[in-house]
Image (cartoon, rainbow, N blue to C red; front, side, top):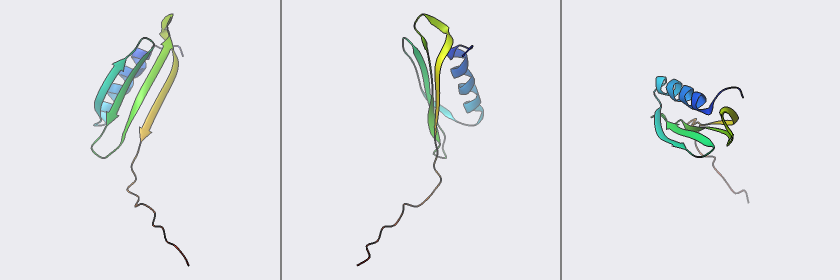
Length: 81
């Protein structure tokens, strides 16, 4: 991808904060950058971007995970005899 991981993560961070998400953690390793986020209504997730160790200016892989909660009651089980 022709954009840096720093730009992608910064973009998601700003847009999530505009929608009342809290940025819970920010981390960076040798070849990745990641944030985790959550909101009071139970929605949470993470944004992860990685790059080749030799070229930090080009994003190699991006993953956005969003965990939602729909308020669905657990299914009831019954045994028929």
